[in-house]
Length: 563
Image 1 (cartoon, helix red, strand yellow):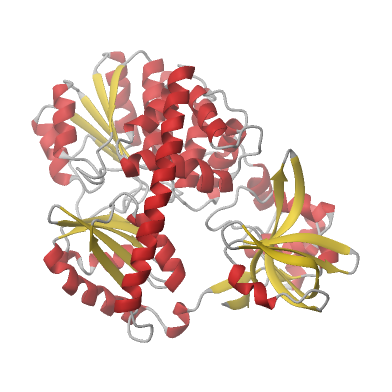
Image 2 (cartoon, helix red, strand yellow):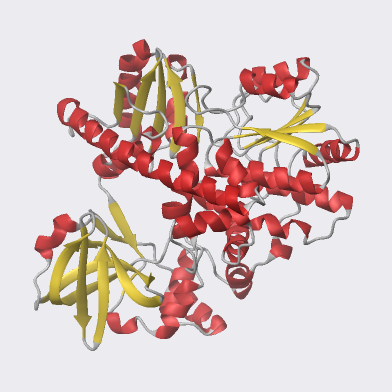
């Protein structure tokens, strides 16, 4: 792993910002590296509130979508909400459902079965809407490429509002309104909203037109935060505002179902941030969609019955344990195939396919394989004569664009720069493997295959003061494009006896001068040999964080790498 010092701002700019904000120069330098260069920028970054959210009517088609939904509300039309089976989709469905029930509407929701229907708007779902005699279908977190499916719904007499955040194809569906900030003709100033974020803007617009009050939609921000963080969208700009406000709601949660989930996952009484969502709450919500029917996640989020909430939360916990066991077995099978088929000097990408793999977990395993081997990775589960694949990428490689260049070999595909899904005829897999590798080889240089950790500054442990820790906490919520600041410290002494704990985690204490800190390196047990107690010869890159244990919090350094 390479350690690279991030781009450093000019010394004069650091001094100027430090004086403006009355903060240490190290904090000013980190802010400047994140394009926060003035008092106003810092105010927005640290203190932006609900009033700083963008006007929802800046989004293309918002006026049409909001007026159509208001007509459905006022005329008591039947509405079907159609969502995706992941956390982003289920939180968006739950939010719209709760909103429309509050308005007195007859509303149902539909989430496709991951194994039987796959991702997106399906003919089966449209038939369900027709059986329900829906007048209006609203898609959330899907629909932007569903040209034939929207046409079918219109032919069956239903209007469709598409609400999505994925990349559009070359043509758009003929829907009543299409909300997607990634549309080329959409002037919305922020393009990286999650699906639940786009749906929230629709609620904001409807609330404005109906005169429900500026703060009416605030109560839904806990769901917006949950879905946005889980979908790994960049936590900058409007996403950062939505998530920070939503985390406040999540930490003072009044939703019966969410509280049951928080309790069963062991988070009751603990501070919930983006990390707790990504590693604890989101996998449990995702598990029911990966293993079966994701509608159970929606019922958990919308129920007002405590007994039902506890029962569903227990199901999520159980299915998450099952999912983890399947993950582990699939990961080991993938590593075995890699040993037989992969050559580091030859292959620029990895495509693994196997009968019997569970299509609900291959995305998680593809992420682990991509991290392990540091190559763009696609895993394909073969089921009933069709390959269902999940793609995960690495820095500097747009997997969605790569799939576009292989589209003639695919039945369907969709996704983002770093994560995508696809379906493929198994007989096309060998040709697809060759094509993708050719694309990857043409786009990636030798250095792109070396994992890198970019650090913000080199400091001594004495610089980790109470004031610095307080300021670093203000940088949260952390996530893509707003990661925890990373530091490098040299010539550290290891004190006491280092040990390996849990599942290959490295735990030890370090000292420099009169400063002593606990340190932990998750999944870094293989670096145990680099720790020599008593010697002042350890260099380490790490982040500073709080560790909550048994009702107490303590500062610890989370190790990224060490030498």
